[in-house]
Length: 76
Image 1 (cartoon, rainbow, N blue to C red):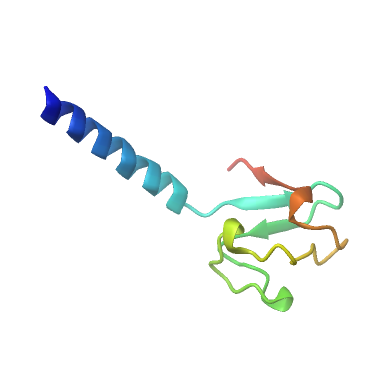
Image 2: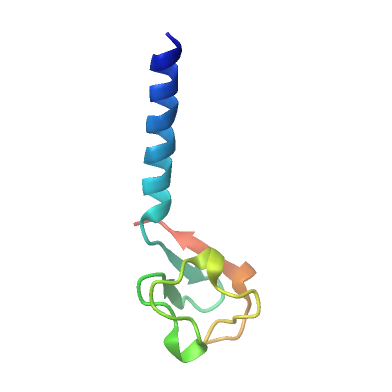
């Protein structure tokens, strides 16, 4: 029984990791500008492929200037 539980736990951990690996998009609630992790914001100093969690806290929306706290994750 223990082996089955361990395998099940490992499978859940793997599936959770793969869900985290898929790029997401984030939308500014004030102006609607969209941050796409695949594209980044090169003009704002954030290279393509940068995950939202890795975007610096000092980064601001290029259209309206609000911070990361004013963005919501968009469902794909």
